[in-house]
Amino acid sequence: NAGVTQTPKFRILKIGQSMTLQCTQDMNHNYMYWYRQDPGMGLKLIYYSVGAGITDKGEVPNGYNVSRSTTEDFPLRLELAAPSQTSVYFCASRVPLRDNEQCFGPGTRLTVL
Amino acid sequence: DAKTTQPPSMDCAEGRAANLPCNHSTISGNEYVYWYRQIHSQGPQYIIHGLKNNETNEMASLIITEDRKSSTLILPHATLRDTAVYYCIVKDWSGNEKLTFGTGTRLTIIP
Figure 1: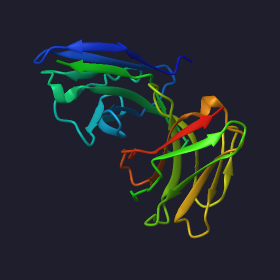
Figure 2: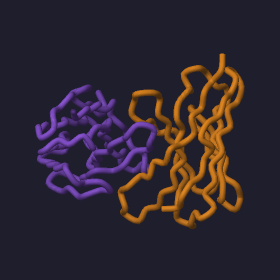
Figure 3: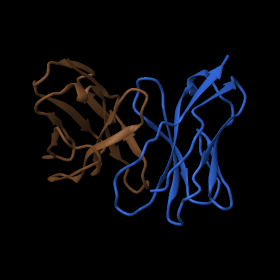
């Protein structure tokens, strides 16, 4: 298994641009998550999904959208990028029957100028 | 979920046991203690979790006090690759999907 993969690794956006951060997992996990991590801080939950077709807001959803059309993919969309969205974004999936153990992807480092 | 308190940083000599403390004095009966770590520029990695009994796996041991108000993560023979930020998280099964990552403890292994 490749685990949780994320693309791109790095991206620079101009204010007002849009982009989609891709996240894919090949472990057939139902639960998937998007977090952001600002410098020197812990992770904050943006959105999560409990299965294909079901998504819900986390702690900091403003400025983002998600979709979950398949079990494998959970893309995160930024419609109008703002400097406050400069952060590292991590996607994760939850291991079934393993309580709250989550597998994380390598992250996408996004800079908005 | 209960709040956790961890020291901001610790050093440990290579080859020695690293003991990372965590206070969670408001933990409730159905909340578990989880430990994750984050090596620089990587995604967090699950280490171990427990409810009230001590736990051990191939990575670490988790010691939870009898009153469950604090716990200690033990890395028995620390290596340079264990240098990372370690997060102690308290979480229940309420259906709230949010894992609350605080600022953790930055552990530096000294050669």
